[in-house]
Image 1 (cartoon, rainbow over the protein chains, first blue to last red):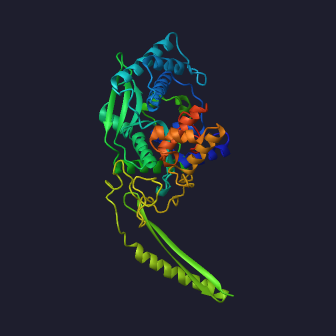
Image 2 (image 1 turned 90 degrees about the horizontal axis):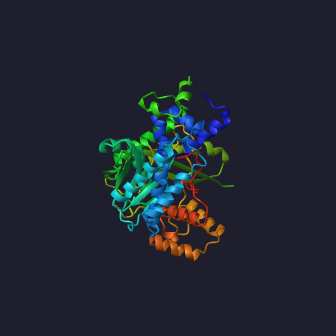
Length: 266
Length: 197
């Protein structure tokens, strides 16, 4: 499968080799053809209801943390107003809601935010170190592209990443599943501050009938984990250079937005 | 007419744990006849290569990769000054150098994106961050003294002392304050990306 403009494709591939982000690396390792659809061909795809809910919750938690960072913590009422505004922001990616679905999802999302504020037990006046901050690590010395990413929250030296999920995560599996992201954040944090993180936490908001927060804590990233990440980035570099964009059929295809395009691949 | 011939031979080798070390020797010599250049160059190349190969076999200090540079909350005290890496560059040449495949881009990949350049004039952040901060201040007509006071209030240090993470956070904050909403998942001082990170 090729893009209609080969010149543009080679430029895109070149730019994909200059920098790398954890989400791009994860997607490449999950399915190279899906990576091609999203990052090379840039096929437009409709935003799903679940993604809208997740990104709205994420945006509101950012506002909550940013207010704490500025020493102007928000009340629950103010936070609800922020949530309502963020939910309405569907101008760029309209969601194809079914009858009554939007209101139900909106309530679910707000219950997740409320659950987080209540169960995380983070005092409103506790000031974070950093909130939703872009960072970059120079890996040229390792022969690798620059690593870029955005740290959701750093508090007391602990790197915190937010997730929303429909299922309660298993602690050990959660650490493994998100290792590319958390190790990347550690590399970014250390490159930007010259300090080692105090630990890693994955804060998963679980969309159950009664929502709950599961905090999975891990110690600072080890040298072995960092080297594993570097090997994966190396594999990304080689694969992209070879334009090795093949499908990886598996269970993950069930929720893939490029299922039909993939079936047409040869 | 005297001809100055300058010869340099450098070698960089990979070491365990994503480290490397390097050594180079430079020599200058004076020739009187241009016809001597080729022969003298070959002689110097062989001489310098032997010298470098002999010395580079001595690896010297190798840090314990599980502990080196991991003193939480402390600078690792390396000589590179920009604090870019957790295991830094040791002044003897050992450090966090290349992969075992040798020098950075010898594996056939296109050159990696240019590394962030440390800012000059005593700034702790990168040159890109420094330039972007100054541009926001100029374009939004912000008072430098107020931005300095803001940095002290938010981070407890002045603008020049901000590390890269703090500088990035200040940039985001100034962009919001000046009505320019920062990119949700990427900062303007970072390189162009093809799509969402």
